[in-house]
Structures are given as C-alpha cells and as structure tokens.
Length: 271
Image (cartoon, rainbow, N blue to C red; front, side, top):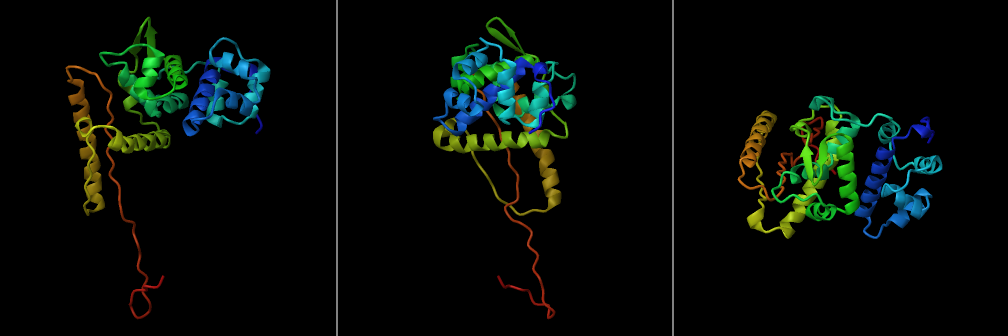
C-alpha cells in the first residue's frame, strides 16, 4: 500500500481509538487474542502499545508508520486518522461525515446512547462493559470516540446526550452499506436471546404469506409507522431500567425461476 499522508499530521485521539476498535474486533473473533498478540502483529513493542492505548504515551512517528504499514485500516479510516480536524457533530442528520456514520452504524454505540438514559446509569467502565456485554477496551474506545465527535458530553459522573435524536435518522447515501453490519449483528443477538432470555422479557415471532410487490411497498410504510409508535410508547415509560432492540425483517423466502419451454411448448424439467 502506498501512503501519501504525512505521518506528522496524524490525529492522535483518532489513531488511538481506531487501534482500540481493531483490538476489540480481534478479541471478539478470537477469545484467546490478546494485547501482546496485537503488538506482535503490528510489530510494535508490547509495553509501548499498552501505554499508547492507555493514553500514557504519545505514539512516535516510527510507531505510527509501523501501524500504517500493517494495513489494518481502510482508506476512509486513514482519511479520518490523518485529518487534523477532530470530527464534530454535524448540524443535520443527513450531513454526518464518514467517521460519524461509522460510529452510529455500530449497535454498541446506539445501545450506549440509550444506556445513558437509564435511571440506574453509572459512569463506570466496568458497569458499562458488563451491561452491554462488551470489553472494557470497547467501552473506553466507544466513549472516547463519541466524545471526540461531540455526540456526548461528559460532565463529572454524568454523560449528556448531544444528538437530539440525530443518530436515529441518517439519510446519507452510504448509510445502507454501513448499517448492514449492524443489522446482521443485531439479528445474531436476537438469535442468542431465544436461548438466553426468558420469554417474559422478550418476544420472538414470525409469519409467512404470499403477496405481490405492491403489498411489500405498503408493508414498508406500515412498518415505519409502527416503529414510530413503539418509540413514542417507549418514551412514556415511567421507569427506564433496560435497553431493548426491536428488529423487524420482511424478506422473500422464494426466488424467481423461469421455466424454459421447448419448441413443442413443453417445459424443460431436466436438471
């Protein structure tokens, strides 16, 4: 990979956050993966990397070059990392930058933005990590990136939500691609809940039917209205003590198959 960025222009907070995100992703895929293994893969001293992630040491240009040369970041992440301007909350939801869209496309960030509204919320990394069933690395990186993007504001032992609902209504053209990963992960969480969560605390159901595409268009509109009603109903909760997710899937179970006919008008049933 040819890197055209000047290493001296690296955005240190973003560099650190992206490293923590990458480490968290690897730990999720491999429970035995460690910080020592990460430092080995990056060809960076274990002690040095630990201090950088803990904000106890500023990365040297040599360390930054090793990380960049390892090719763990894609082009968009590199652009964000080498931008001197710290990402800030865009004035309108349809104008979120790439870094912000990546943030709000991760279900953990969405869940955290709801977690801070719980009556029993505690600004404690251990409590946050256990509540969301994520690592402390992920919790720390998540809060740091949200604060850097001005999506939240830390006030002592409290965290203020600065989004005004912007994160739930993004119309940027790239959003669907970013949201695909989030939707897959949430569906996987839903599958896990079938075995791990009591029926009294969840609802899993489905139905099958035949229809035409016109019905699908109408159904999508009804689903949008239903989601809005559910959001309004949730806002009226007297006590907020748990974060829930509502996933609705409408998809075809069959594919279009064209039967070929021979000259006699009979269908070809050969395989």
